[in-house]
Image (cartoon, helix red, strand yellow):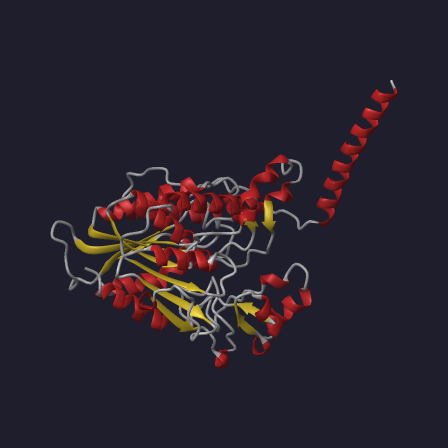
Length: 419
């Protein structure tokens, strides 16, 4: 009887501890809002037979439903920036022998991001006679809660859809992707022999091993919904989620693991152009370097943004590697960043004179620094969120590329050298 009583007492203590944890979490955690739930309007591919213009129209209609609470001007901008899109090359460009166009590229954005980040690249490829299609990954463009149940297979299905639609119009298929979009581009190329080359920007080839544990929250998050989230942020950016769910981390980790399994013993043989920042804190730049080092195609090129252009890592092929200075004292730029590759510095939203400023790293525990970072541009620095950069002063995460004109020149040389 004493044993039974003791067991019951211990059980009660466990239950009370769980309830106390629940109460404390509810009191101290940032509150969940409607945007942290599933919107009910899916951007998953519902019909793989849709023509690409029909897919764009369908997605725009979905985005309009979710964002109907915004003002008319903001809603139009949000829909335009988050929607998939297409561009056609000039009539003077080379035609395909059996299809309307010789070359085409499918552009894929990153995790929590949107097609807005691909517009400047799209214009470059259009100018260089590529037929361009850009997709919106499922769970994106609407509200952060739509990432709670999405899977990397949903993203891969969308990548395959875009590739198929491009294939119907072009003879040479290229894939271009930023971060998670880069990983998806590589994955598609490994299972699709039609792909002739890749353009990768800060590709997510390897992420923190901690992401493998991200979905453990499912054991208890039914009781504490806040635990489904790594970050709860204001989500003021109309082209990118600021809040970040556990599931998103789990899915990108699963994708990178699948990718590494496929790459193991099978180096990438098609031509690859890549651009990455040596100071990247989001994905592993060394994984990108290793990937490019193992890729045997002589046309391959890697643009590496660095704070030390004179330091060359041993074992790296100098003819494949272009080291580019990422420090610009005149603009108070300390380094490049994961987020600062695909857009020019004059971008009206993310550029250094743009309307959006990324100071989110101060928001949770340094509110005064957050306010200073937002409101005092003359005292702010720009760069990646490294320890060294954070010690310099108020730091805004760099969201655009001061070397974008040079990036276009490097990509043009790569294109001109293609067989």
